[in-house]
Length: 447
Image 1 (cartoon, rainbow, N blue to C red):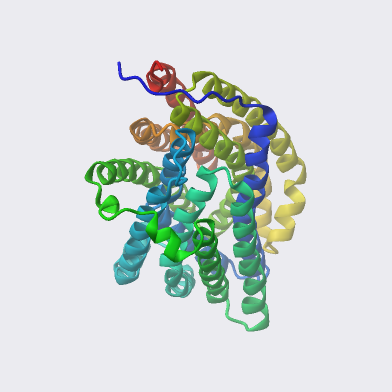
Image 2 (image 1 turned 90 degrees about the vertical axis):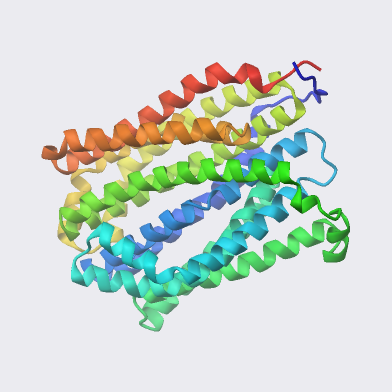
């Protein structure tokens, strides 16, 4: 067996929370933006506009999720580099990710038309919803290069456990988005296009500031460039590893968003009221999910650092503490969601039919806080330990379970759809637990 040096360190609850708390604050701003956008547009009282906004946001969630490896893959590689005492803090990993993200973003701009056509064909929106979707899409597509650059930068920040810096950037990005959305939609009367324009402006400013922070960390652009030896960016072994990781995480993300797209498409086929009601509940679910993502981020950095340091005790400590705190958060937020849901739903939309349907399905939706907790924490552990094949295969199998249950329970209507959502979360958690139990011993080698 190959031997590697060991760099011992301990993991305590405070280590988990020093990453999880700022990461949660940062991540929670993303669904808050969704809630604000839905509220701003929803209070216009037009279900078609709200449906178009929801589907437009879903399209970009799906498209950008295919490049989400730029954040999670970079974070895992950088965390392992930090654990192995890399003096450059994973510089090569983030530079490669930035170059790749910029290229993909430009490619998305070139393919904007075909992507919208495919989205409309798959989601089958009503005519009014389709018009609103197009208005939103044609503006927000310009955020693509900047959004993907931000993914790569956040991966570097979180991989180095610089969670506060990531938090500041995200708060700035989404704060600009929220303010501009309100001004553009209400003040200027731009409708759904105004909500999209707020997103574009926020992404541009966050990318510029993030790049400035990266350059400053290395003493400026000139100093940064001197730290990269000629030809290092073309290291075929490193590039092959990055693309292998990227490929598997892209497939994983496509399967992840495929499940949400299936859920939205089935809701769309039930009518614009069901689509809008499910969208309100899903945004509440995302609020809980992004709090749990903070714990997952801590698990990612700490287990990745443990693998880089070749220190099994730290891995076990990070695993255990992440699960314990994840359960505490899931219980608390699930209860808060159930108890506070009626008020939030009534605030988010003025449409009586949407309100009534959302309230009907609130209890079963709130239970998702518990059913999806293990999958979130395992996501972080698998990313940190770069178990990309496990993530890919587990997501594909759980997607098959989700679609199978949804088809089996299709006569139950929206109840069956939410039951399928629970089965998907539970299947993911179970598969990831089983795979990690088989593989974790092989993550470490004798000193």
